[in-house]
Length: 393
Figure 1 (cartoon, rainbow, N blue to C red):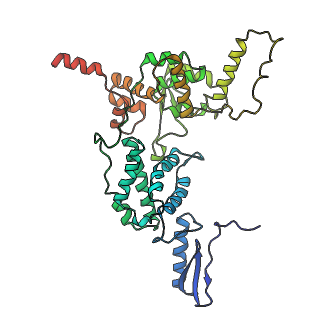
Figure 2 (cartoon, rainbow, N blue to C red; figure 1 turned 60 degrees about the vertical axis):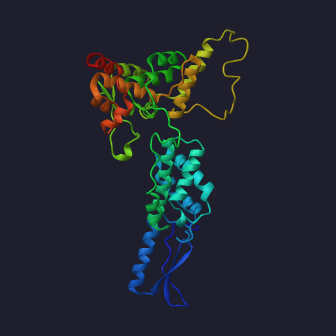
Figure 3 (cartoon, rainbow, N blue to C red; figure 1 turned 30 degrees about the horizontal axis):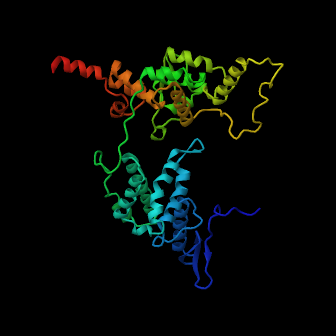
């Protein structure tokens, strides 16, 4: 069986013409000194170690020749390996593509070593021209700088390049250079109640559960019976995967009696199967349609006979944050109320907890590492400010 290229270690060889030791790495010959000497062996080990650490690239341009396009391709290989969670690409991969699109448009063939602060500002101007928000522009510029920093760490470009790029300050709030996004606000209970009337049963229970617990949308979608500790009066939901796990933090969601009552209907299943599933929701919908049928079964189409045999998309085994949001927003549209997203329920829960138990209570329920983040999610209760102003002002 032939060896797969890229997985064998380049050999230490003798160059017959010069008598020197030689090794070919990523298509490039490296002379190591007199063949058979200890010094040549040490140099060989050093080069091989560097090649292994860099991910065994099959080809690598010289540092003084590498273009921005080649740097993007090399960093993209790193992104595909680095930003993976549970065997699937994370959103960071998509965000990187979005960040480098203006860079490729303007400086694709430019030598990476010549890319400087003025060029970075031009890329930023292109992002603003595309109507990216100020926060998105700053985040994308940080991704671009991170790519050049990685290139310097891999010795593809001089270290002076990312050092110079780091001197470019981010866009300041209120500068007017890029549009500002409206802050995410809590959603009114009346809007949620109106939406629930138009939601299927399972997404409706997801909304109710999130409303009581302050969980993130993704945590609601990923809930499985095996993630629940039901030994106490208050159940503990510890997600198998969560947003901040790469920081080494644990996440505990406290499930009280009202949320427990919702979950009881979904726990009789395989322990590793998600509680809230689109395929179950579709089965319930079809059963309801069949129950409301007015034509006798002896007449008309038989149940299921008018369905597409091989549909392009089938209801899946779990919701994700995006599909969950779409279901909720479609229901809000049918209800005739302003569109809202499930993440706003988290803000609503944070506001309610902060009002009743203080900011430390909001920090505990929302699972934030510091109080500052909880203050962002839990909007201050205006009633308290009104009462203080009435009494002292």
